[in-house]
Length: 325
Image (cartoon, rainbow, N blue to C red; front, side, top):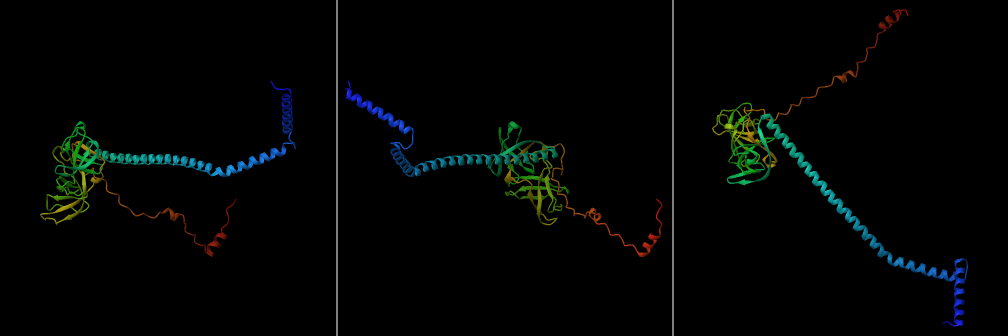
C-alpha cells in the first residue's frame, strides 16, 4: 500500500505532466519550445551527417543495381541479335537452295529428263577416285549405279556406288572420268576427259579435221540407254584449242558450266529422254546490245520558226478585203 504522501506526490506529477503536454500541443512559445527546437536542431544535424557519411554506400548500391540491369538487357539483346542473324543466314540458304532447285527443274523440263532431286552431304575421295561427293538419295529412291547426275548448270558426273539412302558420285573433273561429247552446232564428236582440276576439262576430237574453236559449247553425246551419261546435257565451253586442223594431237580446253566446288542441290537422271534434246538444254546466248536511236519526238518539241513575210506579201494582205460578217 502506498502512503498518503506518496499518492499525493504521484498525483501532483501526473497533473504537472498533463499540463505540460497540453501546453506543448497548443504550440507557441511554451516552456518546452526552446527544448523542442534544440532537440530538432540536434536531430537534423545528425541526419545530415548520416546522409553525408552513408550516401556513397547507398549510391554504390544503386550503381551496382543499375549495372546488373544493364548487363541483363545487353545479354538479352545479344541473344536476340544472334538469333536474328542465324535466321537470316538460314533464310539466305533456303533461297539459294530454292534457286538451285528451280534451275535443276528447268534443265529437266527442257530436256525431258526424269530426275530425283538430292542434296550433297559430303565431299571426299573414294578408292581410286579423287573427286567424289555423297548425296542423300539411294536405292530406296530408285537410284542405281551408272546413272547421270546433273544440276541447274549441266553435267556433274555419274553414280558410282549406291546404298539404301545415300549414293557416291564421281565427278566429271576426276582424272578417271571420260564422256562422249559433241560440239553444239557443228555436231563434231570427241571425248571429254577430266583433268583433276575443278575448272578445266580436255576435249579431243575424233576427226582431226573437225572444226572446233573458242566459244563453242560442248554437250553430251549420250550413252546406250542413257547410262552412264544421258544425251544433250551441257558440259562446258571451249576456251582454247591446241594444234591445227589435221594434226594428230588436237585437244581443246573446256571450262565446265557447273562449278563442282559449290555443289548443293543436284539431280539423278533415273530416266533419260526418248529423243536426244540436241542443243535445246544449253542456256540461251545473251541478247546483242543495239545502239540507242535518237527519239524523233524530241524534234517535234522544237518547231521551226516561221519565215518573216516580205513587204509585197504585207501589201497584198492589206489589199485583200475582209469577208462580210
